[in-house]
Amino acid sequence: MPKDKLYFGIDLGGTNIQAAIYNPAENKVVVRDGTKTRAQEGAGAVLDRIEKLCNKLLKKADLRPDAVSGLGIGAPGAIDIKNGVVLRAPNLDWDHFPLCEDLAKRFPFGVTVDNDVNVGAWGEYKAGAGRGYDEQMAIFVGTGVGAGLVLNGQIYHGTNHTAGEIGHTVIAGRGALGHRTVEDMASRTNMVRNLKRMIESNYPSIVPELVGGDLTLIRSKILAQAQEQGDALTLEIISDAAKYIGMAIANTVTMLSLPCVVVGGGATEALGKPWMKQIRASFEKHVFPEALRETEIVASELEDNAGPIGAALLAAERLG
Amino acid sequence: MPKDKLYFGIDLGGTNIQAAIYNPAENKVVVRDGTKTRAQEGAGAVLDRIEKLCNKLLKKADLRPDAVSGLGIGAPGAIDIKNGVVLRAPNLDWDHFPLCEDLAKRFPFGVTVDNDVNVGAWGEYKAGAGRGYDEQMAIFVGTGVGAGLVLNGQIYHGTNHTAGEIGHTVIAGRGALGHRTVEDMASRTNMVRNLKRMIESNYPSIVPELVGGDLTLIRSKILAQAQEQGDALTLEIISDAAKYIGMAIANTVTMLSLPCVVVGGGATEALGKPWMKQIRASFEKHVFPEALRETEIVASELEDNAGPIGAALLAAERLG
Image 1: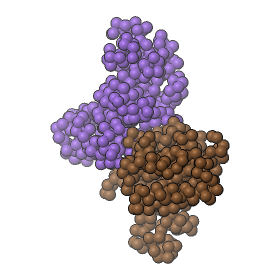
Image 2: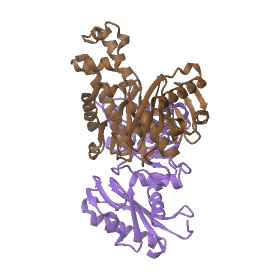
Image 3: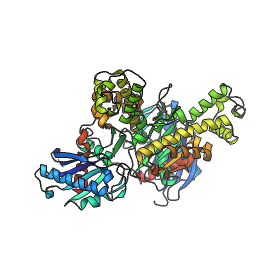
Image 4: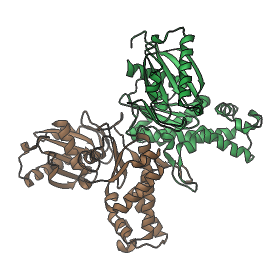
């Protein structure tokens, strides 16, 4: 990497936009900031907000636009990488939106896009917990559950540009309730829903106290507090979710014979080492063949920065 | 492909060895034959039997050994392709066996090896139902359930050489019986076991009549006969297995965004179109996103020949 080059890395989510100016040669986030997405105001308004955010970062870092060599952006949904088009992004209500072309008009450098989860996986591969493994998966557990695959040192997109939708794979295909996906069983959304239901059925828990009686306020941090204080109900629900995440990881490692899986996302960051330990135990129980128990199952190192750093690194790779 | 070239293709199984002389340019099986494996007699004896079988084929086709340009062989288990070593093959009781080196000493041409399921998938990709799709899976349902992946026009082996073990992925991870894999739910072995158990519990079925009262004689062909005659119990068991196979295919297509899946194996060949229709219906119900319902789910074209043809085609590709 040329040592002076800087890149914008943007993580465009349904709710928030996170952005950074990143120096790949020094693996250094020069400056970072965020803003709301407000997708309901339309794509043009979202692009205005991205541009404004980038200008704010330049100002903060005391840089001129031509000090930056390119911009990478991760967007939710199915992306046509080659043409820089967001094919379908339900979160943003975008359909065949030419993101790269429209964004590039606003800057004196090139723009490249990929799926937001893929971008996070790329960050962990190049600068995070997955360094050195040319085949790997990064799985992110939060509101939903998504994954990005790196195969042969490249992001694997699949023919239909949607590879990595691990949250929508079936893990509990039997029983009175019909089939259940990984997201149904193990997302933070599911953990919170189960916790609420059990509390409303009068199971004892300290969670109502932690949220001042308002169960709509349960977030990852509340789960983490209840976990730390040894709340039995919370521990059971967390451990159940970890079991399914471990199974889902085992399924992918069994299919793809991977040497490394990075686990990240809001729930993982909040629940920390005890959660990772449970995931790893479930993984080892379910993977095949036994030799694959050696696979590294590691927590994300970049956490919140995986998206912006991954996007900036993709820009460095693709735009030079 | 040079039009005169011929290759040996061998499918080495735990029970049987199938072999063919194949002409890739004309997509023609010149001659084929088989023998028993008898792995318990040791690796040397198995190699003797392969050599004898090859010489028999040459004689049948009235060819001299130097008329053949190479030999490809599919072997069960984890294979180190590069060095031609069978790392672990429980079916054969082989551990780090240098198959290519030992086999090449017996012939005036080169030898190449891959996993037997991968070889079948390669056959379907190059000369069978999966032609034209550079990303695809072939799944084979028989005694067990295995798959081979073609990604970017190449067999995908994974770091640990065991990719494609779809039969060992968890599909029913909840319930009193604990987690269940695809093989537990949907192999022919499982179908037969369920059928026996139900018949022994006095559920009405024509199957006892078809096997003259000896339930140990239930094979794929018996399942097919009972299916054709509309035996309600058999139809229910077959349809249940098809549901899980469809889910397993959906899981892989969801993860890898594949445009084509070939379905083969003894059970698939015997149960035919009604079975394929049920698999496809379950696949469409469970795949994500909706756009992937367009994925081709097609029955094997090469059937029994997928192994020998795939192995011969690999020899042509790797040995020239």
